[in-house]
Image (cartoon, rainbow, N blue to C red):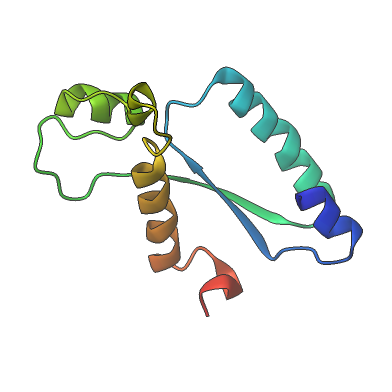
Length: 107
């Protein structure tokens, strides 16, 4: 989709990627590749990561795996759902927006 947008002349101002801290190695390899492509096309690229500010569970967690272990839960995928990383991804992107790291996208 990103490559198609650039081909149409509709280059985005910013691309945010939320990292759960528990991605597969191939995902991190791809990020290195697409980061270079975006730099070559003048697209700002940022990776957002969840940083615990206030926490009610000990120890605090910053990755999806740490979340599952701290809360003694199973990832939602084990129950046939696909939203286990949504909370960390959404929290990361919302934090980036609040911190003003999203340029015109928040205005």
